[in-house]
Length: 234
Image (cartoon, rainbow, N blue to C red; front, side, top):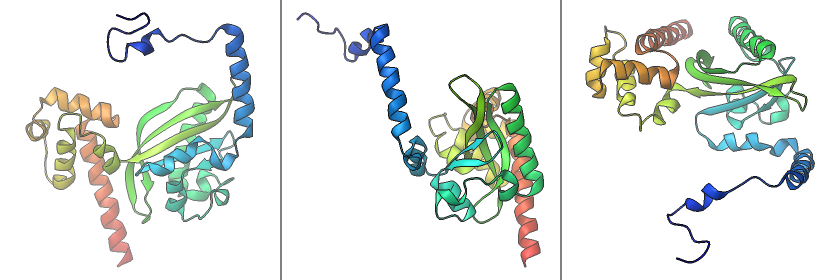
């Protein structure tokens, strides 16, 4: 075997090491200069424009929107990102929904703990309420002070498309969405997904942060919201 060769495919990365301290310091300084040179319109959040069903946002400590993905702009009918900058949840959502979002934000700003896999009611582009999986994290400055919040929303439909590798959990979700008007128990979902009841419970919580029963209840609430909207608009 030649000197320097690896014994298995991909083994090269296991020998990677950080730069020596001085070279690392120089590289970090270059990163700071590089980041300051980026036009805010072309920061990394632009990548979210190419992820269907995912909405990214970032707000400052006052709750004003600073960045938003193309999907968020479309959600509220804005043509350019500059049109949403400075708006708050109270400018974009009904008061009760906005209060809920602001309460979550205040907790993050106060405690610094992220909120992960929270299921919340948001309006879709048709102005119909839908359930979304929400993740929010604090944004910190160089001194560690929290100066804002960033997060993303993902609709249940988009989320389930990513759950195909989870061994049939999407089949249980589809079953609930197609049969929510009648009684559905955990054993029925288990048979549908070819899993045990315990596996179904665990995988729902991993995927959505809630169990299958609460998913069923929230699906019924969503259906009631849609029915009410259709009734009042006739």
